[in-house]
Length: 139
Figure 1 (cartoon, rainbow, N blue to C red):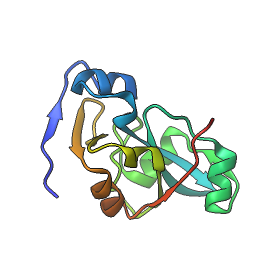
Figure 2 (spheres, helix red, strand yellow):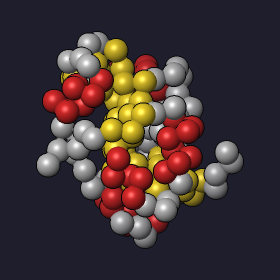
Figure 3 (cartoon, helix red, strand yellow):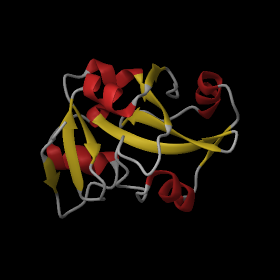
């Protein structure tokens, strides 16, 4: 995959900023969130319109979930919070994709910095990240 990377000087650090920059629905933004499952980093690729329910995530991954701090995110992915892409990390992470993202023809993800994004299909997201699709969004 060779996506076109777009840069927005005003920033795309949050899902709201990214959606405004590219002119898409908030739900089309892929939030690449790192959690710890029994102490091991995992990646929850979440729709920008959703929040992660850590109990549901833990049930899906079969483990105790806690949020990774900024140092753990950088160590696991090689990227800082606010610019973490959904794949291409320092090491392969177990990943899950929010089923809500599959409802869109295209989604947008961070491209490694807090001011860059790229467009891809949900199918490309699942394939490139090696993620399983699951239901872990909060109600």
